[in-house]
Length: 321
Image 1 (cartoon, one colour):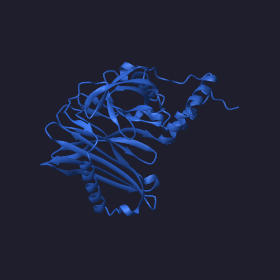
Image 2: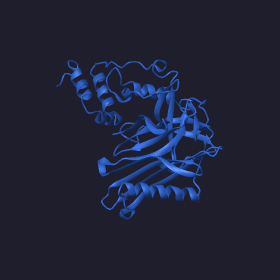
Image 3: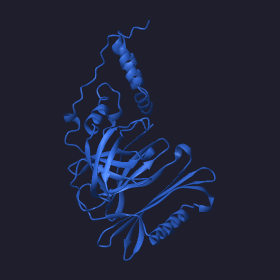
Image 4: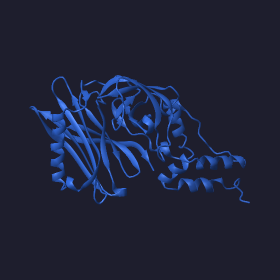
């Protein structure tokens, strides 16, 4: 009979050397937990650091994506931390099983996802309601940090629309009103979509299925407007074509000031869609937050106007296999 009492580190090292994606799968399926129980049964006490919420997450400002899931269940998914207005990535160790680090996932759940934990809900960069946690819901993929929540707001999240939430309320409100586009604005978006397709040698006649075509408008009282659109279609060879663009209204007309295109097949697919806008650092310059989807994972990107150009200033968060 194998003597686990003599060489427990053989098993621990085996798990630590597996690919990160496989570790997340094993962790979600409870295999690692079962392994630790077996060790404990054989009188070996694994070294598990105690959960110290105050040490790891106290005073952290966190930003969540808010979206719907199956059966209209509303979920929150962490994007980043903010430290005095500066963007901080979520720690990679949230998915680690290193005996000195793997407790952070439970730590995160304990601190941010305790039952009835409350957060502020934002739509178009404005405070629009409240969110309360129901329970962690981290079985939507091999590795994720999502939670099921209740939303109290006049805004209804449905379909592909997303929004933001945070434990901080006093973000600067830039006065944008988020709304659906008019027929004229939809036609404008279609015109720019055609131009981007033409530039990338995409023929709409080759598309057998349009998976997504979303247009969102943000409007200030001053007349300043953003038109943000995402589009996904599958062609006759099963390649996914994805387009995302930002247009800004100047002198009574929209001009595309940022666009992105990607085509891919199976494991090479990518798409990008809008989450929402926010002034994260209170400098009166809006940031655009998007969600990237890949073959078996997702993450978040943030764009900001710097030197009169949209520049990517953040990539992080998300989950997957």
